[in-house]
Length: 460
Image (cartoon, rainbow, N blue to C red):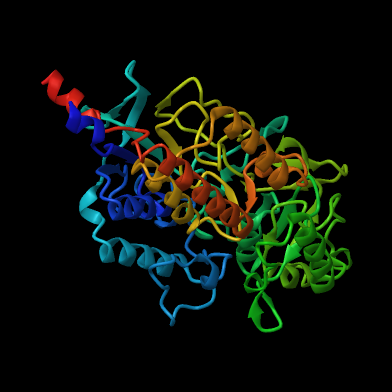
């Protein structure tokens, strides 16, 4: 009994995308035992093109919108010969090299899905796998991503053409041959811009129309010969000041985009998640892309838009975002409302000491190495070297963080998880330092003692 009270907890990690495998690496650094389950046959998650698990939103021409300078892992430099904005195949190779370098592959069980995870009466996690096995764990780490469950808008009427979500788009001929078609892309986010620009090139689409509820500010990838995201305000600067300076910079860089046909946005720059594209302005200014108002009604082979115009349409591509969902997680304390879950430091539900969500954010400028930073708190906590604040204080801090990060974005499911990466990390490191002091006062007692193995042996 004395040994079990001091044993490190056994952890289950759900998913081996960039959030899952970088968390696994951190747990390994702290000698914390874990199993990582991946429903596919390889790591990479969303960045695994044509992932056989069907959860990847990666398309053939995809290049990441974040420069390599901002997405690299701290302890594994990205290759110098990579371009500023790597192709998905290069990023995937970088991930594989990371996993091999740190010896993580043998800790990942592939082709195995977590079908159910629920807490036992004793507070452990009972995890059921697609193999039929059920295993006990002291802690559960959810890293299943949030770009796999397509969000579909609802428009009245019926459409006789073909409709897909951008999640299913691979290239101009898969899953639909787009050549010679009248196409409507719904949305103006990054995926919408990429796909619209690709299909607008002649001789692919006959007509390419983009429909959206509101205008956006389209920011180029480069400014003055450098990736634009290399220039950022220092993390110590208050976010309001950062945004004020950023708005002035955006206006100066992009000018008045209404003169090339963009609708005037109903919000200020940076009050929405940025849309990044260097090609869009060229396609729009060249007449290859037409801007329409939002869809009002589907009418067989035609579509009526909210401005009253009616157009013949063959294909509608919905680039309308994703739902946040955890179909395997059976826990009434975790409720997703409009893609929002209140979590301490975007990781933990106050009052649930052994459940963690990794990478559950819309982090600017990137999500690739976001969980790498979060894992610093998780590993120290599970090793007994970090102690949480009191539950009431956790809730207070959570509400304060939400007000800071999402308070000045317009109301949308897209913006319920927004945060500024450098600002978040700076405050996360401060919280870790405070938690280390709390843990030292408590005598470094493990908050989640390793009991799963003992329970398994007892049941056997």
